[in-house]
Length: 394
Image (cartoon, rainbow, N blue to C red; front, side):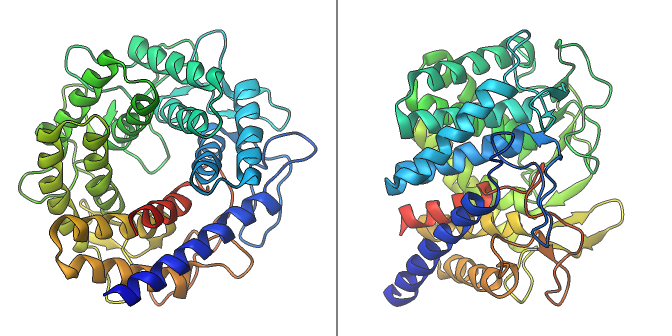
């Protein structure tokens, strides 16, 4: 058992360095500040592309976490570059929250308040504080938390609403992306609000914040995790009535370890026990999306009753951690085998020779065409986090 784990540790550590090196060498915008908004699959830089808040927050989180883990001063410097850009350009100092995008000059472009984006800003600013001990970063994270509580929290039915205008008015199109259902509450946003709040709690153990974390964890038990299939329900109306759409194997396996980690951060042993059991249920549900080559299919379309035959980069990254965590909880080698086979799939099909990971592959391992290496959604967060999580656990 020890030999494959030692090999996995070495390979993951090497890959983490390669991922971060790509972003250092290829993504820095030395003319306009911060980072480029888009680099395509052929490494072509689109220097005038808009810059997204989610991308920039995820860059900040990745380099802050890597700086804290490895003590490499270069990673900490890149984190500071990301922090400075976010504070200068993405924080809305008039209405609170963060802009969705800014133009290449840093001027607000899409000013809507997507709660998902503010959550990632809280997540990243908390991590930057851990890396740098910069008190202003912690204060920014706390202020964003209070803004979300004031404008987005559903104090009557729990959870957080999806999106608003810049001035926090109702928004007709709530969708995070074009493929999503237009519903006012989603698992994706509430999961990452939970993740962000837990990271904030780890540096600011506020009692009201803990109560909201417990509330969100309880929603996953009572509303989001399907007790029969084990899958996550993804879309809801304001009353938490489920709106079936797709099964997301990536979100299943991500939640399988992340919910347990959140319960551990607040040190609620009853919830830790609950989410160890729920995590195994989610991991088992996600295994239904595993292909024979070790890769995890993207989604199952419920309306079409058909698998979406694509294997995107981020579900593979989450599968590494989720299946490893399931093995740690149960000692069942099925899960460790799934983790190692997913890693083999990543090494065989997703590692782009010119750096970073392909967006995804089609059946047979052919890379998906027309997808970016750097963009509104393509970032160093899922794959660098998977590497760092495995290194801490190994």
